Image (cartoon, rainbow, N blue to C red; front, side, top):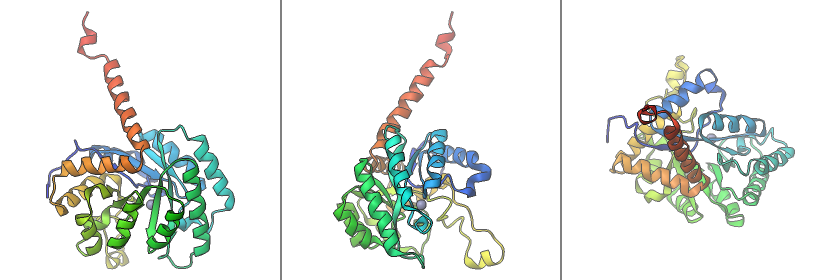
Length: 301
Ligand SMILES: [Zn+2]
């Protein structure tokens, strides 16, 4: 595994809650550290209607991308009206190159006390909206892969199954439907045997990288339950960790880290096609800006 920093690499953090209150005090510094670590774009998925504007504004401020959706854990407070707001926002920002997906949506069958029927209703309706607006989806999958897949077969749409933690069979079912699978901090833990096995053995085009910051800290930021009980705060994850997670994945796959960065960035563009246009537009903007800037040639008399 390479141990040097690789700031020249161009990573994409396909799942980063930069709009979370945890980043309130130092959001700009967090994003600057990610840029210094070689993260070109973060994708900021909104989790509820009240956050739609915030996610969009942040993406524009930082030159990033965003997704709009209602997260399964937010369905208890969500109103059916919020689906109308989502529909309207997707229509209004259709031409916005930074709006790349409908998300974060999905089903959570791990957290107790959630109404499954209600989750399923919001999931189905948001798949319908994604299809109507021609956008892929970013899915939250927790003990719910089979139910998510069943609905996707009825309403086919591609995208990313984020923080994937299912079986090999479920992984291939998502791939067959045109999805990529998101891997992040979990693969840095020795004991995450299944996730590590998938990250090592799945075909390279299946993989995209993510931090899910501020959640899912890699093992070097993680505090055990005991340490937390003794007053150590849980380490806050941030998008700048993506490069180290990427180096670890390259190590697991015994491949060159540069090739991994290139491949996972290409994979993200395949499943979120608007990202490709965004990357091109950013490049053109940079070139234009440097051409316009007064260089030594322009200063000659
Ligand atoms: Zn998330």
